[in-house]
Image (tube, rainbow, N blue to C red; front, side):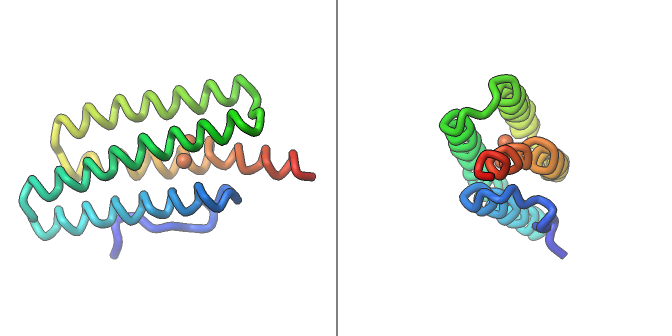
Length: 130
Ligand SMILES: [Fe+2]
Ligand SMILES: [Fe+2]
């Protein structure tokens, strides 16, 4: 059984970001497989590097998109600080090096962030296009 699974309840309706969100699940599952196979630390570190890059690019592109559609300022600020706070906590956990704890932390955050915060820009875009 994969560690994390995509479900349509996470769909934002913005294809580009839905694809990026799915990609993140793939990376988490890859790390989980590596972890279960007890691959060496170097390999796991490399995939975490990939995940860190992914987060940085993903957050930057979401934020640029929200700015381009004149997303309400307050919502944008809340969204940006959610990204920043997560990155800070995530990097701290990477530093601590407990793989399973880190995987769970990322998965829980991802589920809640996509469902409660990312989906809001999808709704905003739908409203705007009405
Ligand atoms: Fe996102
Ligand atoms: Fe986001």
